[in-house]
Image (spheres, rainbow, N blue to C red):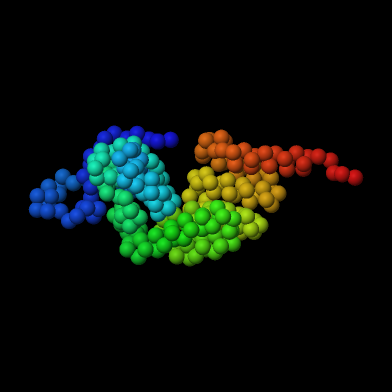
Length: 256
C-alpha cells in the first residue's frame, strides 16, 4: 500500500550534494543531522518521480538496503523537478536526484557511514546485478545457472540485500530438488531478516517438499501473520491446497 507523506522539505546532507558554497557554509549550523539509525527509506513514486525512474530507484535500494531497513514507495515529497526523491526515516531527511544505481549506492554510503564504504558499493552493485540476472534465468527455467549466479553473489559478501539473495537461492535449489539446501538458505534469509515474509514461504515450501507438514503449515501461518495480503495470492493459495492435500492423504488409512 502506498504511504502518503507530508510535503517535507528538510535539507539534504552535504555528502549527498555538491560541496557547499560560502553561504551554505555560513548556514551549516541550521542543517539537519541524522539523530537516529535509519529504519526506513521511502521513495516517491508519484507521477513526476515515476517518469524520472523512481521505480528503478525503489528496486535498486531494496536490493542494496541492509536487512533491517524497510524500503517502500510513498507519495509526493515535493521538489518534483529534482527527482526521483526519497526520504530517510525517522530523521525525515529528503534526498533528491536519486535516479541511477550508482546514485542509490552513494545514498547508502551516506546514510550508513561506517557500515558502507566505496568497496562495499562496488561489491553490492555487482551482487545486485548477479541477482537480477539469476532471477531472469529462473523465469526461463534455468535454475542451475541461477543457483550458480546467486552463489557468486553471496561470495562477494555484499553489505545489503543478502537476505534476498539467500531467498532467491532457496527457490532455485528447491526447483533443483535440493531440499535440505533450500531449507538452509531460507533459514539464513530469516536469520538476516526475521520478518521476511517471502523467506517464511520459502521455508514452508522446503518443509512441504520434505513432507514435514506441521512445520510447513507453521511457516505459512507465520508468513500470513507478517503480511496478511499474501492470502489473496494465487501461488499462496496453491501452496495451501497442496498442503491440505498432503495432510488429507496422510490421514487416510493405508491401502491393503
